[in-house]
Amino acid sequence: MKNILVTGGCGFIGTNFVRLLLREQDYNVINLDALTYAGNLENLKEVEDNPRYRFVRGRIEDAELVSTIMKEVDAVVNFAAESHVDRSIKSARPFIVTNVLGTQVLLDCFRKAGCKGPFLHVSTDEVYGSLSEDDPPFTESNHLLPNSPYSASKASADLLCRAAWKTFGLPVVITRCSNNYGPFQFPEKLIPLMIINCLEGRSLPIYGDGQNIRDWIYVEDHCRGVLAALEKGTSGSIYNLGGNCELTNLEVVETILRLLKRPRDLIEFVTDRPGHDRRYAMDIHHAQKELSWKPEIDFETGMERTVRWYLDNRKWWKRILSGQYRSYYEEHYGKEL
Ligand code: NAD
Ligand code: DAU
Image (cartoon, rainbow, N blue to C red; front, side, top):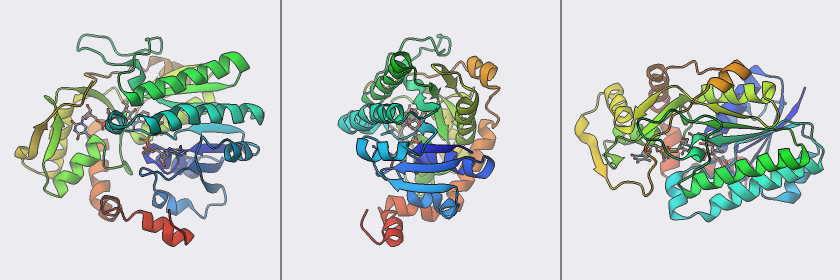
């Protein structure tokens, strides 16, 4: 049985990954999470008493804490990040601290503790920049051409991981995934924001002309891809993961309106995001061949499940919207978050 450090396990994808590990695998899981605005301890309340699970509140750039934890760790999966592009445009600093410095601290402590590995770093298609309509999808050998402070910080972390592999021979594996959706996604991202705005009768703000294209993947498919890369990936390799599902933002929002039976006039076109990437698309042949992985859940099925989850978990997102999700931590630990 392996001891695995999952960072950022209280965020959207980390939560789904920790649940998958405890449900279907026999790893012991240490979840290191700072509980930023995006981290929610309530997401994992059902696994809190699992003897194979332990939560540590802390930051990945805290070298003293991380080096203590690494002493009992075999493998690492690094989800912890500042993840929202719009926030990075307002203020890049937290993105540099967590995504760049934090990743380097994890790599240093992993090396000093002599962990066996792998060190799996979770990255994004955004590091490749933007495609035009006629371009072929991104492959792992595309140049890194990030356009936002968020994607620049993720690309920096990818390069630090590569350097640790090349310089110190660390068993590093990188996955780069496209846009995720599904349960537990923080309601600042397109899909949960639009679902909740529909439910609350608010307008649906679409940036620019709504023709920007993203490749959508159901979060469980991403988690299974990360697991496959952890177990079967080759050191020094990069694996693109994606959903083979390119849609314009307008098409995504129209799907939500249809599923929730809401009128189209809720849509409001608003000022575009500065530097807004036009299109992402992923060539996933490498992961399919080497990891025997492919996305299984089609967009219609994934969206029906997602909309159902937000309908069934109104308390979860209402607490977040009113800033009260902190009270779960405070009640639980008897101290302020
Ligand atoms: P999220 O914002 O929902 O969660 C991030 C988690 O990291 C939170 O629990 C937060 O508390 C924690 N965290 C932030 N800073 C920390 C720090 N300094 N130390 C410890 N914990 C910290 O993010 P997400 O959408 O779940 O994304 C997870 C990872 O996957 C990120 O690395 C992101 O770049 C990558 N990714 C996301 C997507 C997507 O569509 N959401 C797609 C591809 C890759
Ligand atoms: O591609 C992977 C990336 O996907 C991840 O690395 C990031 O962590 C994740 O946040 C996500 O980035 P995006 O910027 O693509 O996701 P977001 O949900 O913010 O936006 C999706 C698209 O919808 C994008 O073209 C901007 C647009 N949008 C977004 C919001 C929040 C709108 O039109 N209106 C909105 O209100």
